[in-house]
Length: 147
Image (cartoon, rainbow, N blue to C red; front, side, top):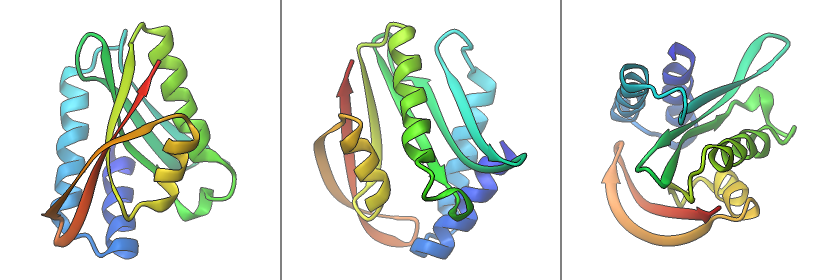
């Protein structure tokens, strides 16, 4: 989980100017994952190249029928190899196998590569709302995939 927290904090600060409150949010999400992990319905995947972590994603229970995809990240060292698609594909396959009926996620409109992965994977944008978070003016988006 150290990799997930540190890589998100560093990457989002460098690429999008996010402040430390984003890293704190990621730390909170990972702490909740560790303290309430349900192995039968939840997973975290960390992609590696030559033993070095280069990406991650979580799938957690949102309700009995809805899973939530969280914290998708592909480090610059892992980009261009379709790792984001593979990580999202793992989430979708796992959710189907565990009987979830849909997957939801929340992202930001500025995350163009992630949004493309979600759209190409069958997710549909169902809502957007401007907000001020992480030291930035953003547009948050909710995406859903029916399984």
